[in-house]
Length: 144
Image 1 (cartoon, rainbow, N blue to C red):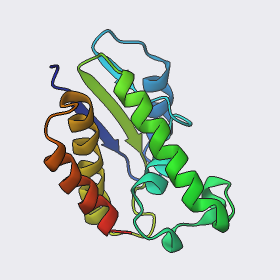
Image 2: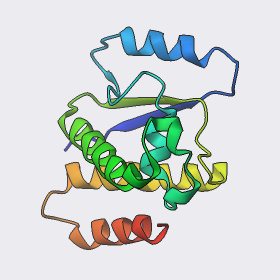
Image 3: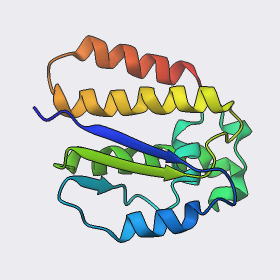
Image 4: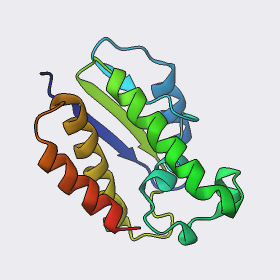
């Protein structure tokens, strides 16, 4: 079992995050995986995946109509989970400029940690730890 470390870069608006994200996305390191789901700026993807109350999301921000947000959220979660389940490198990198998406920053970060914990447990404990995965999933779903 390989323990993975997630590095999450959260840049303030207008501080060069876009340049950092472009540089990170262009690299192919032996020990680091930059998440490829969506554009190099993971803000919209993470906001959509992490948002418990989709009414708080700006539909046009993701290019999605409001009525399609639940389907988009499920698709993005599934794609992110699939990508992370294939990663064999010990380090995962995500980068965003804003994670609020209607949540407080603290709540968004807490939800991201829950999601990363859930993804790590799904990969590292298939068949084992079902109760732990159920509790993390229930906690994540309770925010909806």
